[in-house]
Image (cartoon, rainbow, N blue to C red; front, side):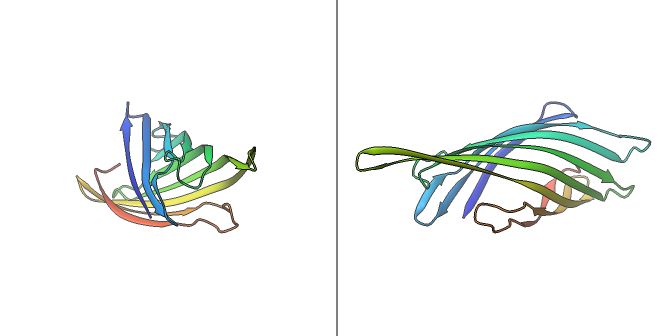
Length: 168
């Protein structure tokens, strides 16, 4: 179980910064999971249309923040691009393509001898989304994230739906 906590802040209409973490519990371990932070820069009204927006971003992750979670530490980075098309009625379609790269390190002791192991993995991300403004202050959204192959060969494909304030 993870309960995310985070904030995104737009420094301007083109630059957004974000930071988040989550409270985590599974398999008898609990604590603060990864600290994720990064930002993205957007170009609005790309091309001959007022409806197409493009953004490029870079996120980083370090953790887990609580030492008792699985006994390892990790660092990750995630460069990505986002394209959003907005129809006249406010309906938005968007897509994200990224490359997630993560490296793990773990140190353990056997018979008073310290050993360190490390490994890394990477996968492509493809996220697809839709949003529709029900009113000036309320927008519904849905997202499908296909995150390639993860650690044990199981693909991560979450489906998200919700409501947020605002139109963008």
